[in-house]
Image (cartoon, rainbow, N blue to C red; front, side, top):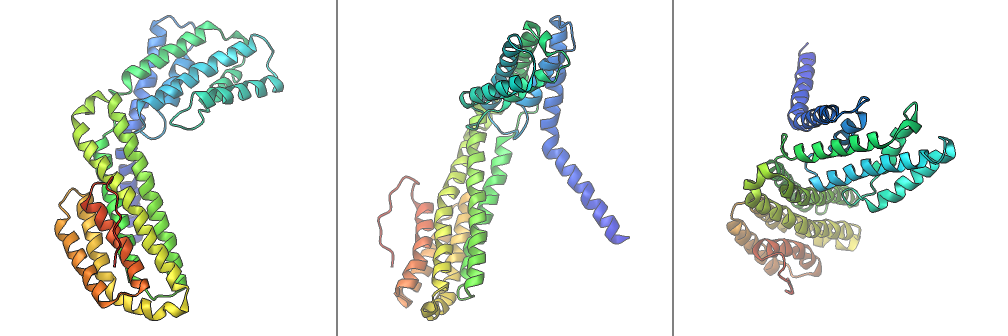
Length: 354
C-alpha cells in the first residue's frame, strides 16, 4: 500500500510539473487558435476556417523558447504550402503522381524557407492537408486569405500570451551545466588507476555531459534571440545576456573537461604507466575538486577567485612533487579551465604548464 501511495504521489507530482512547464505553451496555442478562427469568421469565412486555425497550431509548436523568427518561417511554410497545392490542383486532378509532385515542390521550397536552420517541412505538410480535403479542387483564394488571417493573429498574439521566461530557463541551464562539468571533473579524478573499463565508461559519461552542455548553449542563444520578439520580457535583457555569457563560457570549458577524461582513458590503457597513475590518484583529486568548485561558483554568478587561487596552489604543489610527462598532461586541462575562469574567453593562452 505504501509503494502504491508513493507511486501515485510520484505520478501526481510529475503531472503537476508537466502542467507547470508545458501548460503555458499549450494555453497560448489554444487561445491563438481560437482567436484566429474567430477572426476569420468575422472577416466573412463561408466555411469553417480550418486553415486560419491551423497556422498557430503548427507555428507555435515545439520549444517555447524558439524565437518568433522561427515561427514566422513556419507561418510562411503554411502559406506557401497552401498556395502550392492550390496551384497544382488547379492544373491537375489529385493522383499519386500529383501528390509526389506537390511534396517534392514543398520540400524544395522548405529548403529556402528554413525553420530554425533546419529544413522547413511545413510547406509539404500544409500541401498534404489540402489533399486531405474531400474536394481539394474547391480550394481557392478563400483558403489563402484565411491562412493569412491566421498568420496575422499568430504574429500579433504569440509574443503577448504567456511569453516564455528566458531568465528562468537560463538560470536552470547554467546550474545544469555547472553540475555536469563539476561532476565530470571530480569523477575523472576519482577513477585514476581504476582500470581501462572504468576509464572508458567515464569517458562516455563525460561526452554525454559535454553534449548536454553544448545543447544548453544552443538553447541559451535561442532564448537570447527570443527577447527581440518578446516585448513583455525586455526588462530581463541584461540578466539574460549575463546568463547566456556564463553558459557560453561553460561550453568553452567543456572541451578541457573532455580532454582530461580522454587523457585518463588513454593513459589507463598502458600498463607501463600504472605507477604514474597510482601517484596521480593521490594528487589529482584535490585540484580537480577545487577546480570543480570554481566552475560552480563562476556559473552561478559568484566570484570564483578564492577557489581558483586554491586550485592553482594545489597544482603548483603537485608540479613540485611530480614533473613526469603523465602528471604534466593531467594538470594541463585543469590549468586551462582555471585560465578560462580568470581571463576573457577571447584571451589566447600560450603558456606551457608544468
